[in-house]
Amino acid sequence: MRVLNPAPALPLPGTCFTRPATRAIITRQSQILLLYTQRYDDYTLPGGGVDAGESLTDALVREVKEETGARSVTNIAPFGVYEEYQRWHKPDFDNVHIVSHCYLCEICGEFDEPDMEHYEINNGMRPQWVEIAEAIAHNEAVLANSDKQGQSLLRETRLLKLIATELMKLNF
View (tube, rainbow, N blue to C red):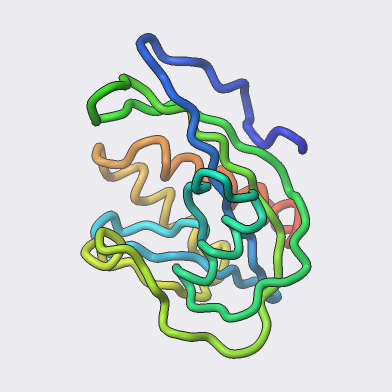
């Protein structure tokens, strides 16, 4: 799969573990299905960590269903991999190496209520169709005006710009 990083991801000093993840790219015309999180006031792609023994595509389908309520996820195709290192604020490791496998996919049919995890609900996360240009502008404003946002928002904004220019032929 092609590398989506604008520059190579550089390891941080200290102990590290690798966490594979998946990210779903679901578009319709100029809109993209994203997760808006009230606590952080940002937009992110649906997706998350891959469980032990789970394939990347099974994890993608599970995460999309849990976070958006989509009943049917189809036409899954690789888009690329985004790698990053972040500080880890839990015992045993200093850092995490996140390897996000990004996939284009489609959803069809009805939606159920999302089945989000407790912390996602507490953070005010909800699925939302949004104009991709609006999501990018919003995330960039959050990045510019807050010292609380870390690499995750930077990753998401970079991915949204790449999606906008490559798939939607917008200039970013």
